[in-house]
Image (tube, rainbow over all chains, first blue to last red; front, top):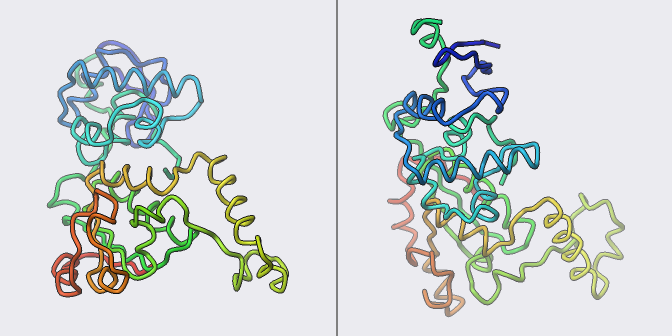
Length: 104
Length: 173
């Protein structure tokens, strides 16, 4: 499991590059991670990320896309616009969460 | 604590460049109208869309019940002729058994937070999935686009389907 330094702070990542400890995340890191995958974060991105992190903290698992829509009330279409093509995975990456495991 | 350290951070490969993933395309033919047979297509379509795969669902024959506004909320599951229920088949045809089995299955799915059919269609439609209805089935059942889920893009012929499915991975359900 790689431990790397981003912005003079150590973070733990899994093999693929997802954070393994969400508490090591902050907004500055989110911008850094987003840039890695060609995204520029807007305030709306941060809203989505904030919900995903709060939901994951509460339930112990990363919300699926369906949950983001059903509980977070972010329209599916918008999630695809904000995090193109693979919204669930990209959102988890930028939010410092693991990939969602649920099927729907 | 140098910039070089940051460079070593692995970055997930999302393979979302059309050239990299070969513009993968998935087509599912949904031909069954029972509750248990509606879900495989819906679950896989939703998963495929979440992976950035171009996805088309083609509803034909009994599969029309999945997109027919009158029936989509009330699909049924019957244990008749299904040995995988591990129940005595003679009893499965008794009156009320289909309602009971449907109720049990819906309860289980609700417990797992699996959406009902109309909500699932909303998800797929919202995620950019394409929904198509079969011309011959529509004619046989005397249905028009007004009778179908609003996200259905059109009632198309078998030939149109061939064009849409060109180069796609096609799954018959």
